[in-house]
Amino acid sequence: MSGQIFTLIGGNGFIGRQVAKKLLRLGHSVRIAARDPQRNMDALAQEFGEHLSFHPCDLKTMDGLENIVDDAYGVVNFVGILHEGGAQSFMDLQAEAAGEVAEMAYENGVGRFVHMSAVGADTHSPSLYAQSKAIGEINVTTAFPAATILRPSIVVGEGDGFFGRFSKMVRMTPFVLGFAGGSTRFQPVQVDDVAEAVVVALTGLSAYEGTYELGGPKIYSFKELLKLMLGVMGKKRLLMDMPLWLATPMAALLEKLPEPPLTRDQLKLLAHDNIIQPKTLGFTDLGITPKPIEDIIESAIA
Image 1 (spheres, one colour):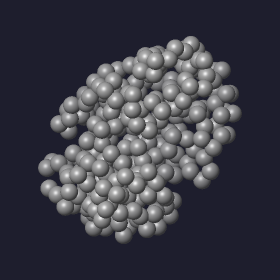
Image 2: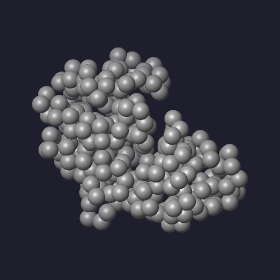
Image 3: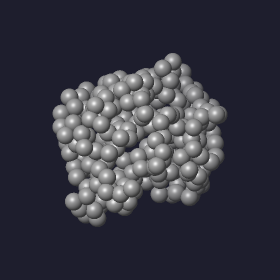
Image 4: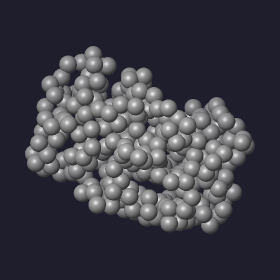
């Protein structure tokens, strides 16, 4: 299959850019919909020209979205935020808007709909982020029953939000903070593998209806990930553990910053493992063998 049109909502972000590149190289046309759709897209625009187009849109009003959804073969919703701020709330963007986008796609006859969620999405989670992700999934599948839900663990690659953030901290301080004893487990995955999962769900011969949890081939503790990062950087730093009761008031202050390095909601997430659950659909069901993060961790370090 080639020559189809795909609309990527929030497609100029970390994962969306990789998906756009893969689709364009397969001969498809890609529409990027976002508040500032051309941000970070100069290289792809130069390479693919008329096959890549940019469309400003606002998920709070849905203005400008229907026109770029109605004749698309597939739509992907990448929209998500790591922290609330200003007019952006978890429930508005990750729950309510997700369902509205799915409904618009379904009503316009879109063939494939992929929604990017996250491992740990749970309506009973103490984290509002995880709650909103779970409600978003429910809203999406209610509106578009054949939707593909993808739940990655930590996604690793150039410009990621984990190693990029902590490597900056390493360069500024003589220590690295850990939380909850550093024992929380993660199953990080390469961004290229997550992007490939999106492309398979969009273009595969089968309709990949259902929820797929995407984790890499190895599970690490939070402390192990920090040590791995330090080894790649060639740095030695003191790993200091801060108990959650002490970290919480600090996070309350930090979350007042425009780009907070830590929030109270993120601390709630750090208190729970972020790994794929047994007997769930995953990479194997999509015909993908995930690659180890050690192959690309250097590119992820800011």
